[in-house]
Image (cartoon, rainbow, N blue to C red; front, side, top):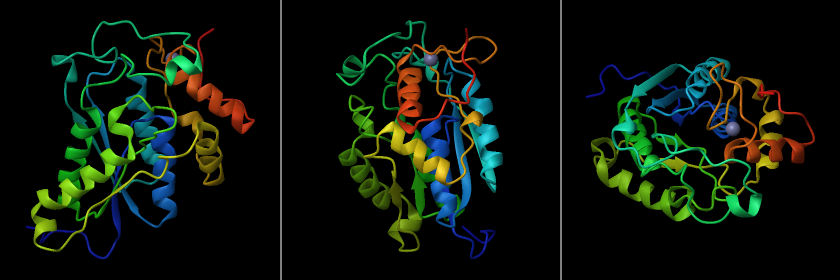
Length: 236
Ligand SMILES: [Zn+2]
């Protein structure tokens, strides 16, 4: 099935949202010597500016291929990101860290990783990088180490290239235990331009961040910890 497979080049599939975490993960993968196959989902998210950001980041990191997969999760709804439920604003960090917020998208990482696995098999890429983080998103069940480890076990039972012994899939989540400030410092050391990235769940029509949703507040906290201003544009 892989007669037209690219040769010795070491490839990795990187889930690239256009946000700060996945841009950092892409830079880590590149620093480890991988040619990057970026995968972005146009899932009907209300924060469309993220998709434009993903294209910028894919170019900046020199991705050999960037797939933007359409997948309308608004058909399901069930999240503030994919329905008309308002995005929570001005929550304190205690509140953000507690429980599963309404911005959780049902089974999102399982959906995304499943597509990444299919792409990894086609590309003969053993490594799949994801920006999952258990520190700031402790409420998201699909951002925990146990979940990532279980998906990896499943992946190696699921695809022909693995069961026939040609590929051993590894799910790489290098940000799992890092705080936002550490993530930003790591990315800056690798030359990430965070001005290319967008994190806001609820940007205005021109793509400017609200500065008040959980994603904005965590991001701003991270830049404050790292001791530099956020180069992304904010409304007002
Ligand atoms: Zn925001």
